[in-house]
Image (cartoon, rainbow, N blue to C red; front, side, top):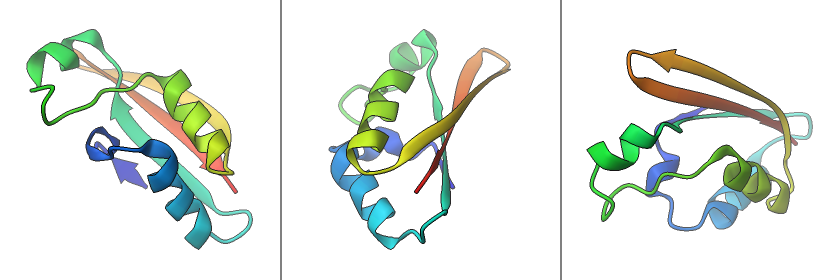
Length: 87
């Protein structure tokens, strides 16, 4: 489970590749991150890198994981996406 951390990973494929390396076959990963446009305006771009779900799903694929599900929830003004992947 990773909540609000992928903003700080400079290279998603490398980071997710390491996650995939240590996961057991059949293991699951859930990534939770903001995908609303207001997040880009509210947080400094020199620190946070916001990615859309397509970019994260492609990085999962390149890392050898399968994106199995995407769920969206809105909490106040923040849109949170939950991507579930499996090995």
